[in-house]
Amino acid sequence: MKVTPDIIRHEFIGTEGKIAKSPHADYVGINGEVIDETKNTFTILHTGKAKSVVKNSAVFNFKFSDGTIVEIDGKLLVGRPEDRLKKTVKRLW
Amino acid sequence: MKSAAKQIARQRIQLLFQQAKTVYRDNPQLSSRYVATARKIAMAARIPLPTVHKRQACKNCNTLLVQGENCRVRIRQKREPHVVITCLSCGCKTRIPLKKKREKTKLERDNYQNETSC
Image (cartoon, rainbow over all chains, first blue to last red):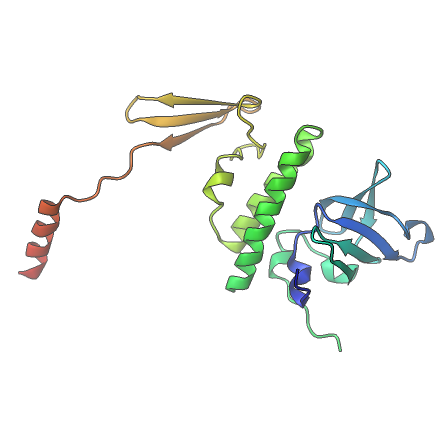
């Protein structure tokens, strides 16, 4: 899978998610399958329990089905799944 | 909208329906949520839902239709031959006509050309 800025428009349900950074120390390290998505949260199945994590304040590591791991700032992912389709990211550097 | 976004939308729809299928046994509610998102994505990108997936989803309550499980498929002959898919969770019926639209015969085509020429 090619990693481009278009990755923020991709589907995250079904991928393996892991929280790399968060202001809340207990959230760091939650990992498992992403089972749901809303405008502001991801729901991750962590050891059998569904944990909802706020997108805006966390940094995620997503592992896609073909094995590529991508680190994405959650701030870029805010938005309903169908609205994220039209989102574009400005160059940050 | 750019064609790149439409391509992504098509991919996402396929992925979501795959997920909905795997999850359906354990959690039918979650699977219907996936179907709803997939349909919303199709609407937002302004692309038609692929025919395969269109027949797997209930338009009324967004459940994933699994034959022999939560939907009834019948062939009916009234008015014109058609297939009726009934969703057993909400009772919504979908009709699929079986007759293709008749193409114009050669005679009709020729007549049309004659009319336009003069």
